[in-house]
Length: 156
Image (cartoon, rainbow, N blue to C red):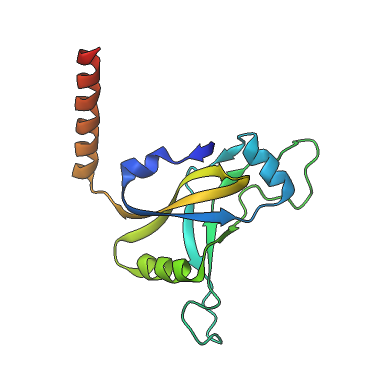
């Protein structure tokens, strides 16, 4: 079941690859997500942490989801320190983290959240490795969508 998606991502970016990550949430955040009180508008994924005391480049780093809005479960019963746009940690394997770190440092590539969904009772975030589209690419996407719509309309 999909709780939230980022449709603008496919318009603004060319999605090259997708990966799945677990999301670290508090109990009330899980309830809010399952009730659909989540928005991915303007959010992004980032590799954080660069502690020089670690020997390997991938050690001491973590993947985070920044700007994802999860509204409070019960508006009248919100903890005083609740931040609905806090940075949330994402759970990925070490080799995936290293791969994402390398990809995020490549010129022109970025990590964006595509979809928040349920998989076997766990809430997962689909991350896309993407390259930004130019204006003419966006026009091409719109034209292709209009042509497909016309074809569907004429066939019915």
